[in-house]
Amino acid sequence: MRVNVGPSVLGQRIDPHSSGRNAFRYAKSMPQLVTRLDDGLVEKIDKLVKEGVVSSRSAAVRRALEDFVESERRRKVGEAIVAGYLQTPASETDHLTTDASAIAMIAEEPW
Image (tube, rainbow, N blue to C red; front, side, top):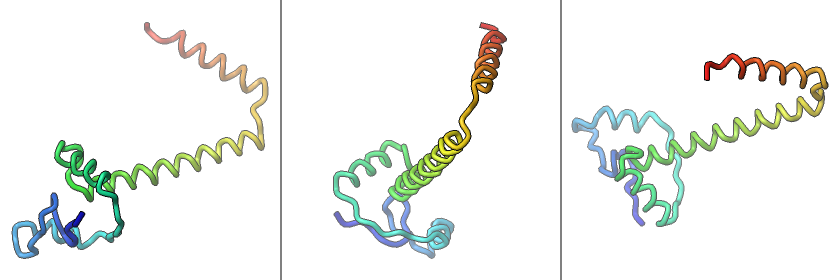
């Protein structure tokens, strides 16, 4: 599958001298990553664009990468929390205190 390269919006090339100048400058200010995707994945991305879930292929890839980076950050934070508890486990008093606090908060709910 051939994909347009260079500045584009919704798959349409941008003429730097047209009304798309702002989009052109925006595209020029961001680093580009080049990758290859199989046709099936590209078709799924195009469907998301057509459905309005994302505004463009680039937006879809950017969103997926942002989600991946955030997921990895959260995974590392989780690992650090587990390591901290393994290094200094909660005591029985800690468990009793948190249980009592949770019970009190539930009792205060207006349901």
